[in-house]
Length: 463
Image (cartoon, rainbow, N blue to C red; front, side, top):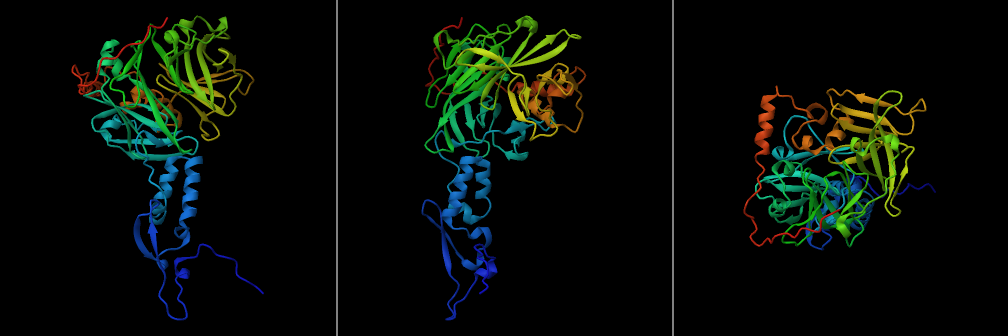
């Protein structure tokens, strides 16, 4: 006997059936996961994917949240009212949050600051997804992107907040850092270049994290500040060196300097606040003062990219990449990084897959300099030797332009593309006046907004 195949997800019209006795169509109640009754809908009003049982919807949503991104989870909840009622809110409360890693913030290049426009455009290199998120910054400026979160600094009170960009939940409020900032000799210029890292740890659920600490540093100031949830004041680690490239990696904050070949661990504070790593850099790379050192995380490894001058066949800039072994405190020369590319900037460095971004060359390094964007091969190019190229960018912007600008936060925060406005000529009087007026909105208060804040105690000096 021929039978029809099962059809678990029938159209709405096919689901409206009436019994021979003339009974009316069944109705069912939709409840949230907490058990609260939301509304009652007729069976004939549902169908297709919307008719999935609640437990199946929850199972799919939980799998997406664990294996994917909170943005995908939010998209599932937005598909229909039934799915939204069957799943939990992405807001966890307290300092806990769902992870949203791998996103980069794009710059529109129209000289409109994100804190004035109250919106940020995000791009995920691994999927090519693009989102424009409306944010209410309320007098704050974005000073850092870390662990998929935004670090905000209030322009008048210098209080710090941690904001989830996609759930728009304020995860952490910290007191003003003004007093600690004055203790370590900070200036307005260094405050404008403030950067920060968010340290998290796994929460009770596999897809959630909790904030452990915030660490902030300021170019030109030889110190870092840190605070934990519940702290009444910021503490300080005072250094005798100026940090160059900083990377949050495996629960620690590591940094390079402009005058030393040692990698330092500046957080958590250790004995003498230093964690030197032997760096046997060949003499051919030149004097350390003529080199620039960049730390970047790539596929779970810490890499050190050294920008130096090569003298053969002509004098030009070159890049060497080393893998950092923190346990053995030594470096290992990297001959190639396969299909990945490194993007180096003043404020952050990225590792992206060239397979996901066809316009980017694999096994290469993109670096920003006073001449614009430069591309270097690692180990050898098509001809079996290293090569170097200066990229001349024009509008419309390429993905490399956006990633380089994202890695240079000062230009990004001003709404300017790095390759266009890294050096602003004196003839652009109107633009310079606008930037000066915007920068003047950032104040270092003399009196703390929170009167209960106590004076920070700087840690020992680093040697």
